[in-house]
Image (cartoon, rainbow, N blue to C red; front, side):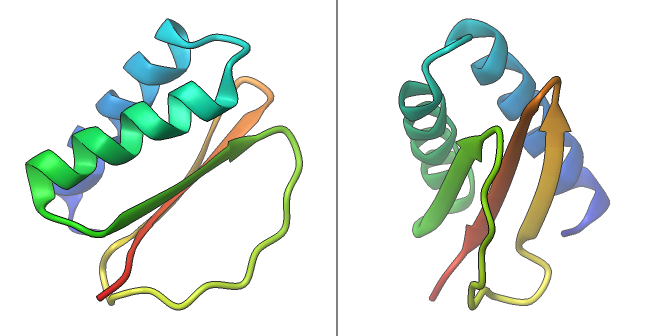
Length: 78
């Protein structure tokens, strides 16, 4: 993910994780809707303490990071 987009995405995730502490579904929905508005559809988001994944994504559109115990995986599909 380009550095500028990565920084904006990290800020969006941080704010959502703080706002929806303990509600991973609401957190993921907020992140997805915000990313869709800022960067166009179709973004997908997974938030949780433990998960595995295999995904297909557009080049330079994947970000995986942690906020406390929760992992956040964000990617865009065509």
